Length: 124
Image 1: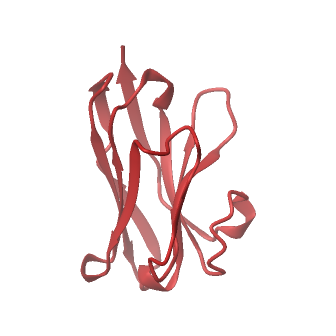
Image 2: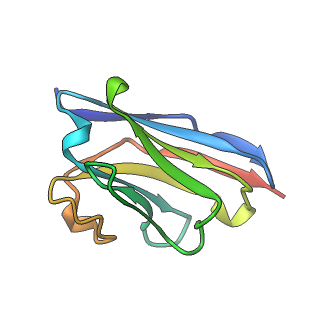
């Protein structure tokens, strides 16, 4: 069964850190670019970080640049999102998704597999 299973969300105070995990089953995650998206209440889902399938490059939305880091562990078939210096504006449901075309676009239509989403809440 092809699926992405996320873990690692939760409640953290402003300035704190969390690490999200996105584990794939049924396919090799290293064959895909993998992006992280988030959706805050009343807002559209936005892409925030992406890692290419060969780890040649990473992309970040300016609002998370320097605070978030995307990485992968091919042995574990998992991609991570390390989030540091969290701010209440980072509160959202976070999703991972795979892009077989390796574009790392922020357009949702490029992504075929999606994780179930995990809540991240940052208190002030």
